[in-house]
Image 1 (tube, rainbow, N blue to C red):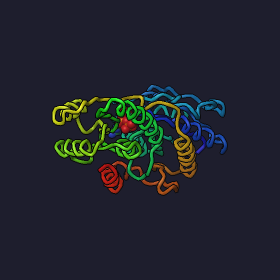
Image 2 (spheres, helix red, strand yellow):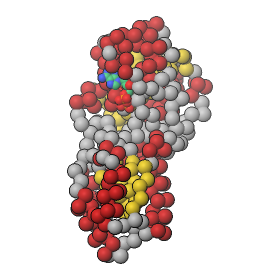
Image 3 (spheres, rainbow, N blue to C red):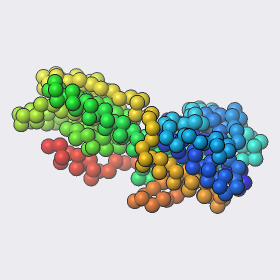
Image 4 (cartoon, rainbow, N blue to C red):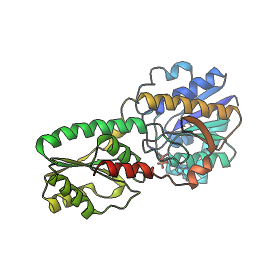
Length: 319
Ligand code: ADP
C-alpha cells in the first residue's frame, strides 16, 4: 500500500490524538502517504479529506479530544452511505484505512472491508468494552479523572458525614465503575453486568454505620439505571444524608495519561504495519502487555465482560 487514510469515529477518547500521530508518523517513516479524514464516516462521505505531513500531528500527543474531530453518521450504516465513502477513498487513491473508535466504528470498518477496502480497527473508547483487548485507548485517563473526583468527594463526604452516590460513564460496560470503585475505595459498585439489590445495599450501609463509619461512596455506572432514584431510595431507607454527583462528560476529556499515550502510539503503529502487510479486517489490541491483532469480526460477535475476580475482590475489600 502506498496511500492510507485515518479517521476517528464515535465517542471521543483521550489518546486518540496520540494514535493519529502514531499512524501518520509511522506511515511517513515507511514512505506511505497518509490522509486524515475529518469527522469520522460523515467526513468520509463528504470527502473531508486532506493529506497529512509530519508536522500535521505536531504538538498533539498530550491533547485530549481528536484533532480529526469525530461524528456519528447514520447514513454510513446504509449501503448507499458506504458506497459514497468508497467513492471518496477511490478518488484520493486511498488503499487502506485505520479506524480509531469503539465497537460502532468497528462495524463501519468491517462493512468497508467486506466491500473490498481493507480497514484496521484501533480501540479508542473510554469504556474499555472492546472484546479481544485488555485495554482501550482513553480508559486509563477517564479512570484517573474519576478517581480524582472521588478523592475530592471523599473529603467533603467525611467532613459532612454524608453518603455519596457517584454516577460514572458506562452504558453497557462496568469497567470504569469497577476500576474506579476499587481504586477509590468505594463501599459499593453497581455495574450493568450485575443485578443489584437495593435492600442488600442499604443493609450494608447500615452495618457500616453501626461500626462507626461516617461516610460512604457508592459508584453507579450509568447503564444501571437512574442514579437519582438510587440516591433517593438510599436516603429514604437509611435516613442518611445522601447526595448525588453525576460526573458526565468530564470523563471524556483531558490530557491523556502516559499509559494511554504509550498504548495509542503502539496500537496506531501496529495498525499501519498490518495495512503495509496488506491485511484488512483486523483489530489491534493489547493482551498481557503484548500487542495482538485479530479478526475484527470477533469484536462484533463476542460480548465484553468485566473481570469477575476483580468484582469479587471489590466486594471483599468493602465489607
Ligand atoms: P462508537 O464507535 O464509539 O461505538 P457509535 O456506535 O456511535 O460509536 O458508532 C460510530 C459510527 O460508526 C456511527 O455513527 C456510524 O457512522 C458507524 N457505524 C455504526 N454501526 C455501523 C454499522 N452497522 N454499519 C456501518 N457503520 C456503522
